[in-house]
Length: 235
Ligand SMILES: N[C@@H](CCC(=O)N[C@@H](CS)C(=O)NCC(=O)O)C(=O)O
Image (cartoon, rainbow, N blue to C red; front, side, top):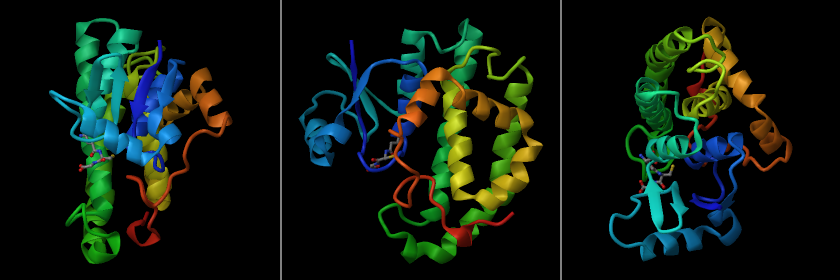
């Protein structure tokens, strides 16, 4: 059995959240647009019928096609056993995954606060204002929330010793924000030791280690969600 993952081939983007869960669980998949190109992705989306993906990432399993990052992750987690041990944990993890969705959208909006379809250069002043609010108010508020969830567990993961789809997403969130806002993260992350430890523990998982060592991860860049613009970063 092998899944097809469809996502833009040149950025980590939201596809990376799905990739990381697949890699951590050592599940076989084909990264279709990285093999066949962005045109193939557009053609595939076009050719789908019924309830189609609105946007990538989406995952194909035979005649099932699942879109929306948090939805894909909770579906994969339920199928492969990284979604918590009981209903309470499963629901709590989906809830947290949706909080990750929210902060990822806000991280994107720091460089595109006015119009997603316009260039960053056309909204630099607004981006400075948006990034300040994100750095000063939103990052600590979200981090408090994740630290509190991690503090209710024996660690290093949200549900204890077993990782879930939320932990791989927290890893990506922390590393993405470290790339985009290195000064702010250097000042802030020491106040969140459980979040930092969770990210490190995900990085040490054998599947993730192998993924990073094989150098298959696309580097963060200024076309993705987490972009480093020095003028948007302050401690
Ligand atoms: N809520 C969706 C958002 C998907 C999304 O915005 N995908 C981006 C790339 S990261 C895209 O290609 N968007 C095209 C568009 O919105 O028109 C998710 O979490 O998967």
